[in-house]
Length: 348
Image (cartoon, rainbow, N blue to C red; front, side):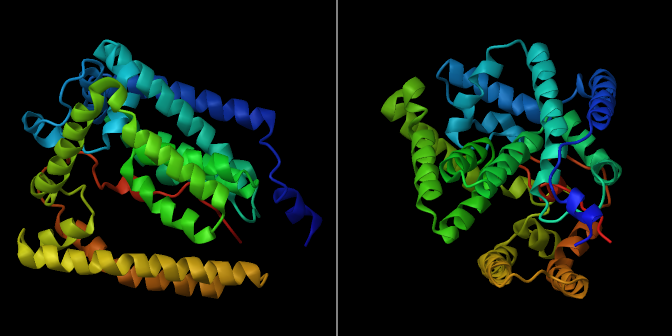
């Protein structure tokens, strides 16, 4: 391997000038974005804030009166959100925006450390990341979404695994799941690795999260919360299936066939097929890693083509759903931001 390439693969920290410039750009843009766009909006954050306010007063969290903005996260999330709920809404918005922007700033250099092999300088990778995904990061900030924070926690979990800190990784995955249920996708991966420290830490973390509301609501109140959560998740989905931001499998078939049993059946079949694809991909990567082989460019292109062909119906459904004014979906929303990667790599 050439010495120049080895230097790029040593995961060296960003130069101080690059770090300072990056921080300055994010801070300036963040202040402008909050003052000009976010301060009067952040509808997603208002869902979190309202949940924290209700949890602080031990009030019911899941209410039909919230309409399209019902909380669908686990009850433990509302307990975690209590500090925000104790603040006035405007103060809480500013605090949350600053926290999210800081998480985004920390995510850039951390993402570079997660790359298996880096062939381009850090400034170029981050520049491409900002150019390619900057619009969507800004959208998350304006909405007050939690995606950036969840991504940072998940990235820290992966970094902990890379450094052999299995127990810490399990705890971080549990935290990510509490913050947003989509992080559950990491749990089967931890189990498939068969490293007991991370598995046990994850199990303990999730157990603590399950009983956490009991400290505020008591045992009976906690059971009522879980009943309310289950009812909300299972009975309030239809109203969001036709939203243009919803790219779930259920939404895909509902947009093509209309809301009904046929769409639900096809979505269920696809959902059962998806874990098989993930397991196949995991085993392929594991075999290649153990054999010391790396995917060549043609193989990577072929793998990408297979994924594109399998996911083509999703893209078509999104394109067909474009007409009309976009309407925000309820939480947790299956929006484009949840499918963004941690880092963008510009390879040879």
